[in-house]
Image (cartoon, rainbow, N blue to C red; front, side):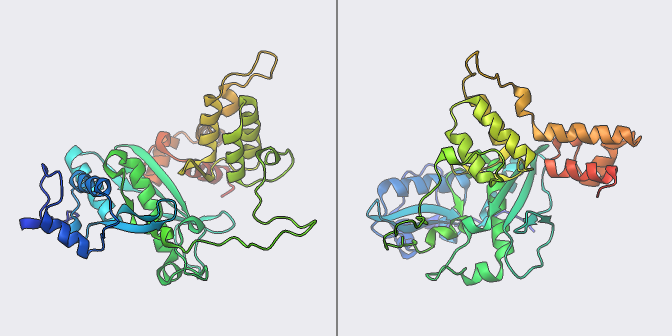
Length: 357
């Protein structure tokens, strides 16, 4: 079955040299729900996006969706497509570049942090992970269910998210991974699955005054209260603390806490981007200026790459058990060389060789 979508022909067809929508095209777009709130800039950007992605708005391959924005005082229009549109663009690029392309098995995570390759529980998964393989490189992304679920006015998941939550969150993770793998081709357009939460009713803050001695449920912890030795902290709080840190030594301390708690592989959100905590802490530590001479120096060794450490441990275990064919066995088991493997796969193989699987 071809992944190519057939563009509209005739008077509605978008030409590569077109700079504005024609009157006929504009009339059809208006029937699709693009009303007078749309700005000329939004229309021009949408036309350029249709030309760049080669998705056809008149065949409903790509949409311009308006949502009320209190700050703007009007509807703000955002381009959207479905996950099929993302797949079409990816396959089209691969056909043109003749690169290798594929997927690893999708994974779902339960509330306890355990990953599964199939989701059978009635309750929705806590997150989903999808990995794209493009030309020998791995592009992984994790989508957290609570951040993407679409809800009704009562805060309950809508029918699609209630009945097919695992499928919906997997589509979000796939969209994130595809956008990492094809950043130039997919920039500026999001999938309907990702944007479903944008239609959630805005939560209203409870206006009752906080009584003396009562904690304010809307208050957030200050950055200084996040990193406290001996406390078990969520990965996101550690990432937020690293963002607010001004010294490499502080980030190194956060890294050690995350490592000791086994949180380095966790996914966190930084500047609206999902990243692995360990990778973010390494990058954040290198961003900061070197400490003063009298301070405890922080070296790259303190920010050791968790994937590189896992590979070293795996090779040490293989040597200990006398396995001389580690690289061949690993590639046969996982379908990719050790040098391209992720932390989870390296740790899994290490456990198998060590008899702990």
